[in-house]
Length: 174
Image 1: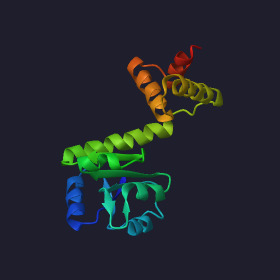
Image 2: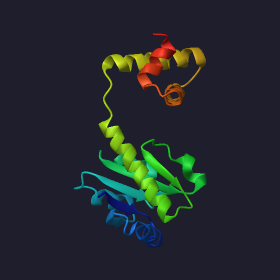
Image 3: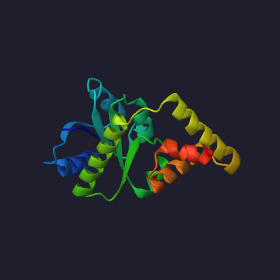
Image 4: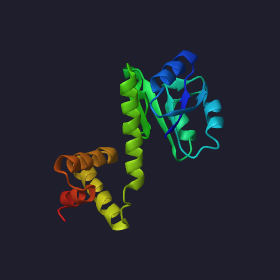
């Protein structure tokens, strides 16, 4: 069972989300109304999923994520026009409107992504060098940023079904 902390400035919003999660197998551990209150609530918890809106009275989602410990996950439910204002890639963003099934599916997807990341095999230093060399090649020869180069390799890997490292090797011609 996943522990959940709801962090919303308005009680009504937190109550709506709590009702959506009733009977879903997710334990609402606490409801917080500020970043300070949230950080006090997660102090003694190793793993928790925080569900919040775009902002609390004392912080926006990116600032909250910066202060959460490893093992704490953050999902932000936002209006579509706010989605691009969240920069931290570790925040799972869900856009409004959202219903019960969409919320539960989003949580299950997010928790599954985190679990896969935990169990993913670490790359060897040699594999990291190949990936970095492929990114450098793309950046130099195709005027990409590092993030664009990474996403290019990632997309090509997904499109071809090849491993990330194998795609980097292919780009380098090795």
